[in-house]
Length: 332
Image (cartoon, rainbow, N blue to C red; front, side, top):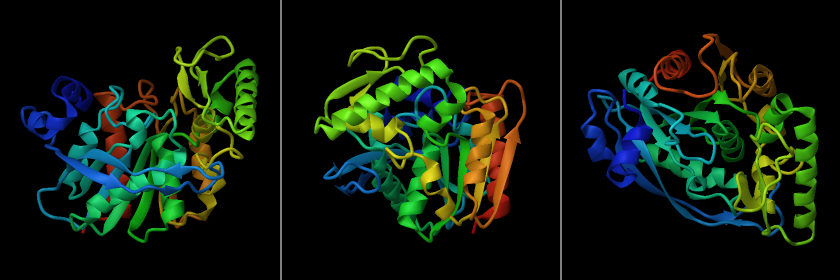
């Protein structure tokens, strides 16, 4: 089966809907949508005076055969683009639309570059995606976050307190880059990373938050430091702290506010996740101590890890996630 990533790399996102029509036998047809996200002051643990500008965003909207008042917004992993070549969302789109739900695969503004962005831009970006579904008559919305998308949906649910949000699902999620690293990285790498973060904090305190820094977070050996523009994540010091910092640096960390979220929560996680290790999945579940209901669903097949790769992994994540949604937020 061809994935969304391979389709879009060949066709280009601006003609996504037309191109997908040619492979409708392999995947449901998605409508390319464009919408606006507002700007405003940066809240939470942003540095004083930081602002978030407005942005034009895009996504793929899948619709059920019959109009429904219930839909799902998926907020993606990593830098914030749902097309990254590592995740196949076709099975999820098929199963959800078959069950009577809308599905919006949303892009974050950071997908086109996050060198100067803040994690808190997830709030207006998810707000805009939710508003897009509401404009189609959807009244009941479920949020799904994959990997770093998990903190993004949790932050939105906490800050917006939107009554339309009926549940949040953490699918192959992390608590934050900083906290998942506590479980994954070697002691030597953690010492080097903590030193790097402290240097970034010094730049911010000195009024040099826009100075560029570089760190290779996934480098297996060495201290991870790199020259800006090198093999790693090149960002401003303030932006790096916002995306990769500790719970005292940024609200990217679910543990800062998860206990204030009361809607039903599901954690769908592989016991063999090589990025977000098993203790991270358990930690996400534990953090939502005041959720109306919460379920921790382990995926146990040895070949399934962090990524929703085409085939078994994408289908198993889709099966477990859809089954939970149908049970807890029936389509209306």
